[in-house]
Length: 558
Image (cartoon, rainbow, N blue to C red; front, side, top):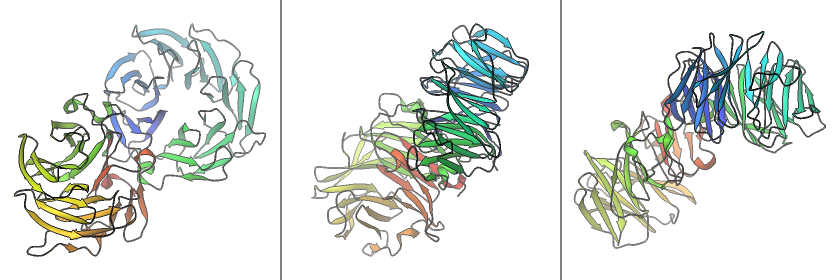
């Protein structure tokens, strides 16, 4: 059980925002589950969060009696709205982004004018206001729940029709339908006519939360710690899939797509569920066997960002940069120095702080648009190497001077990598791996192979190197044996002494070499990094999208 429990969450186009018991709000990547930001400002539990329709801003309600408006890009507070006399338990934003509605245990709904930064109207209810939500298409209308009744309102404070019985309501994304939780019944109705579209009956107990899929065909319903999914268009009143896995009550649901679902619970977890077939798949997959989804809130070091050269990265949090920037071609993990080093196709070398996710410094280097390159901190010097014109070029990044060149006499180079101890630079050719001294530029070793070709990549650890190929098992050699030719490694799984976890580059997963169990696997667009680095604790991956991912496995519950 986690100490800092998620109390509410909302999803918007690949971003999850979760309100926590501590008063913080964290944002998470909806694909990787990696943490992108922490928004600090509330002093007590955050009970409700809502994204603006364009995703640029976020609204939250808290037990500290305030409503806060946040800038998602910077993580800063735009405004704090004071007025409620008790806990704020629900917030919503009008479709035109002009009004915030907040519901409170004090029995009032407050409408806040965002531009005027003041309370626009106060609506009093007989009981505490448990939930408020605007129509997704009509900025003049919203609904509220109170005392087992659901009311529809105009923003002038007048009710538009009689109340419905129910404890929860959700609109379809197109605003044409809404669903009511009424005792043990789930009722889907047309917004304009009130005609019942579908009705489902819960056998054991009444539902607590519900939501529509993006196409409004599927309906997810939470009952205690179980989620049932229904097909609204089907004549069959039975659920098409049941998801079981939470140990605490489910508090929020969201459909990221028509075939996937996210749920959060009082057990401290956020779970991702994937349906094999839509809409009538007989089975579904609980993706929570991997740490990035089973322990989202429990991870400590997680972020993703970009290496855009159009902004100053030295003052930019990773979360604030766009996702269409220059591809990251190499990453180097140096946990002892608390940094990650990346270089992009624009040949800008950047150093990133592992704990904060902030770019510490950036440097332009030569050989722009060269794919075959790497960068690393070597004895206090930030070194960049690249292969061009049958030569290896060794460059001091901070002094902006060429240190060495080494003739390779070969043009068919598949990968270039600095050794983990910073003493050598390796080149993977079509038939061999060769090494040169960083200090002198002299050749210091070579091994011949016959199994690796285009698509292969190099990994390093100290003086050892191994090659990953799409077609065969990885092979490794130790180039650091004194007065000896490179020695082939008999078990590359033991490259990190004391750790039984192996990063499988080809499959983008971490395996336990003792049990053979897959402990972690990247999914979606993060499944195939352009480069990665792993030391048994930290996993670093760079992507063609310009994003950088870092996971700390000492803070993941495996």
